[in-house]
Image (cartoon, rainbow, N blue to C red; front, side, top):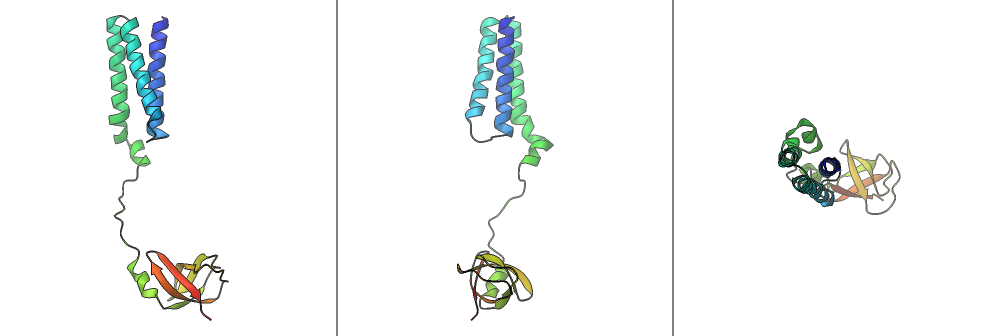
Length: 155
């Protein structure tokens, strides 16, 4: 009876650790390895301590449960909800931002150093060159690097 409890306990602990590895902290690996070792220990204990029919049943249950976690679970709706399905292709920033260089606008929010300015009747996220700029100050776009629009106050 004690061997059955040990086998079942090791199997449950191993499956729980594998589930934690998949659902909570994927990628670390240590918890998953401990779970796999626990399931292997359960199989070893079953083979050495239980009659052959029960040992085979235990090993088969461990294999089926592990396959279900690693092969079937990723195909479920819950697993797909955890993974970003769209792909970022690394496209450049909005090309129309390059047209703003040299244009002037008015700050809509304080720039500390980031904020918003209205340039060509459109709000644009901007960054000052490091200085604090109050709301309502006239600014000029001096540089565009990707999505970063750098402005300076107009004297």
